[in-house]
Image (cartoon, rainbow, N blue to C red):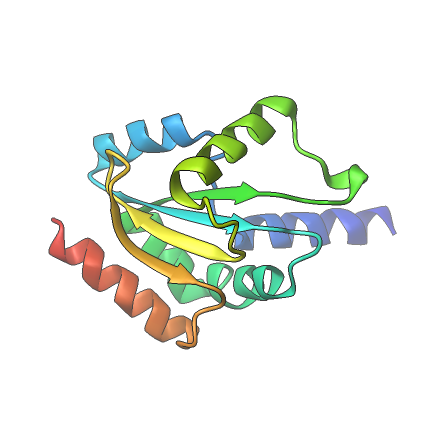
Length: 146
């Protein structure tokens, strides 16, 4: 049973992409690599469309491949369950990010930013596009910035 649990954790961990928890680090990495930042506001344990977006789009193999070459991923999560609460520094950071980028409190809410934090594109809610179409849209914007 322990082996199954470990394999499951490793499998989902590898498919989840490399999400940078600290926004300031994401900006530095984006600058160094000439990447854009994809900032996603989610409620990982209560928002159905947020959970669906991570499962269907952000864990999609095509998206992950494109993201690795073009993006720094940041998830500003706002879990409600006590067991899922974030460390206080991440909670403060996410609240500050929400004040700047998501004052209306929309979930999910996804933004494409340049390395300075300037908004290039936004998606409110679960995109109506397929994962492949969403990935192509993001890649087109990334390619246009190089």
